[in-house]
Length: 162
Image (cartoon, rainbow, N blue to C red; front, side):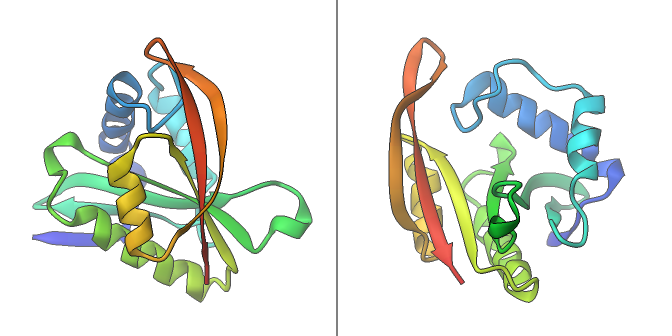
């Protein structure tokens, strides 16, 4: 049974495992070294009422998570947030990303945000498809700005105006 809920500090080991898998295997993150629990706890503490962090739980297991974070730290950007979404490899293709996306967009609307920005590595067709399904539009692409797994990678920006 799938349940979307607020992330709790007890979820950190599962979220860390999901993120570290992404670091080692995917270009979805430009981190190159696995994170520690201490590093993820600092990240976790940056979320809360204004910047939600939610998890998808399947039968007591964290299957994925999604968050909103500040887009930039300048005051004029305060109504714009950046979305992040990560799923466990074992739970791809079950509609969990869709459920997380529905919930985080709803929370963004409740928090009166104006724009959600998704930063997607070039070639990540699954992520683009998910975001476009929810109305995100291509806003631009920076060519060859990250280097991972022996190749230069583009970063594309997608935008949802609420």
